[in-house]
Amino acid sequence: MIKEVYDPLIRQQTTQQIIEALPEWFGIPQANPDYIHDAKEMMMFAYFLDDQPIGFVSLKPNNESTIEIHVMGILKEHHRQGIGKMLIDYVCHYAKAEHYQLLEVKTLDASHTDANYAKTRDFYLSMGFIPVETFKELWGTDNPCLLLIKTL
Image (cartoon, rainbow, N blue to C red; front, side):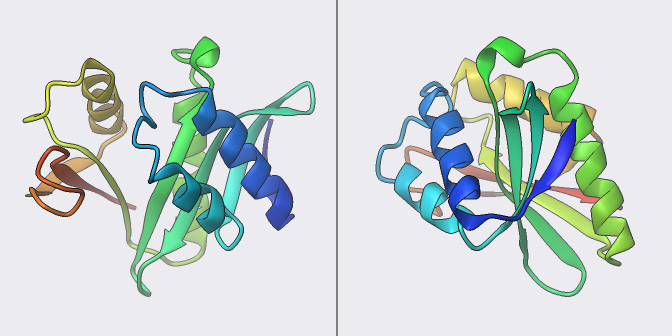
């Protein structure tokens, strides 16, 4: 079941618990405290199983037409079960109701050969996101950033 998480402490705990369980995707130690800190202020939807969060997405409005997936994670043992699709569908429904026109996400570009991020890109592409631009220095030259956008 997907629920909005209102409590800032629970948002931070959920973010920390899930990203720490996913070192293959959250392997830049200096970035993780920022994700955890930022969760306090961001809107979050989480997928709960037996009252435990197993996946989440945090959203950041960028302007009146665009909302961004700031961070998203699903515990690895629950990958490929449709939870990510359900979260994205939920976010799209929410964003449309709030009159956003675009949903954006940033991830590691294909010029970096990480197999886990290849799966991440494939997931976003399968959800209707389209690649817009690669920023080679936003996250440092070793981590080229790909911007993807989905029309709502």
